[in-house]
Image (cartoon, rainbow, N blue to C red; front, side):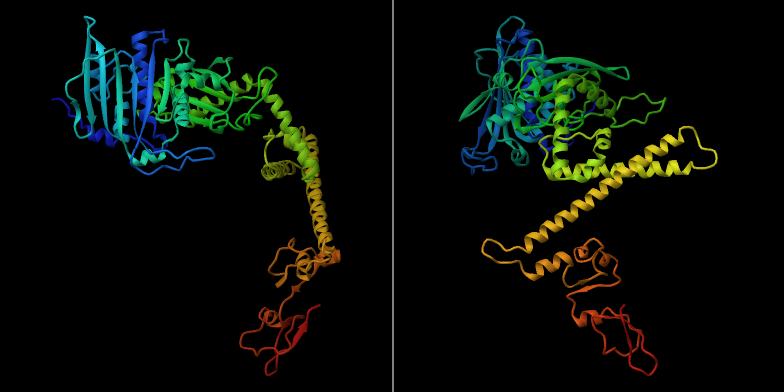
Length: 561
């Protein structure tokens, strides 16, 4: 008994995140490139593929993309992809009508691209021409939708040449709103998704993206953004071989950071930011041979081809596999670790220069803005702390502070370990470990002292500005100076020990028992402990500390010392 497949159910169960709104278009483009390959082989020169963006002529303008010098655009309602490939031959048509077809499985195809069409578009129209076995041109045209599935679209016109036009109509609003809008942005999206075809020995066919206002050639993007020198390397992870194609981009499209593209079936599946994953890999790099460039890497293998999900938005590979002798599965972490090691080797020269520039940035910041880190700077560098030379002061301060905390935690753990070994029989190397621990603690204490002195200097600078007159001869108000010394309308039970700066008046005031600043008598009275049921003390004031009434008497207050 044959099984029955529901197209509507398959479309409903097909995943398409809104962040991948253009994936159905990209699938149509890849199908067109493969059709051109099937017709022309390694000679891509005659191959042509054009992508047409169709916009609404009635709906309101879309201002979401508008910037300086840009005009508002009409919303996108559909696309058409035209190629001069082999066309919808009988074999290709049979595959199209078979869900989860294994046709072109050797290319990594899963037969789900047309399901993504119906996920994001209401209907699809296909018009194609192909050559039969006798070399005669045959035409074919049909509609494809969830309701009608595959149905003829009238009599096929007499074809002029071999090729196919796929029209994606009725762009559904959730995907329409999430998709890129401009010709340039869409062209770059297609280029980055299909860049594998541009990098292969035969190259890619002539591909253009256009709307009513302009056109972009993807082949020109290749020349505009990628340097001619490209390095191909391979790595092996637990017996699986992976190919790496490293590119140096002349400019960074959409201001993206260094990236790793995980590819399957000649398509980009996952994009990963490599910023700071390798020390010194921040933004654009420099070397002696070329202008500043952005590094990107395309990773592919048979292993990735066989483990990509049907919707081609992720891989069925564990992120991490416990390192036990009985488990030899390859994880994403295993692959990533090997890739990063290879990247560090490939970019050895530029990364070294970037690290030196980052080190100079840290030294300049510590010398002029944060002297507290000077005593531990060499230790932070030993921890592998590497910074982006263009990092803002605030972000750099947070980075150094977080690493200083790591150093303190390490020293604390080391201290417990070393002191726990103290005894009559000291283990080998104990004196060396103790000396190393004490040196680390000394540097940390010097850092704390530097921070303390730096903070006091800042407070005194603020005080000096407040007690001076401005250009008009006016002075700061009294409450401004008062609050610098001690926050107003508070007492020492409400603020922390470092919230006041009483040391400006006298260092000994840091050890006071109780202090109230600008408190009313009623406020002070409410904070004096009175035994329950006793009469209210009439002598309570700002100097009262405790009141212990005796039986039959009015309360007596004992002044604070």
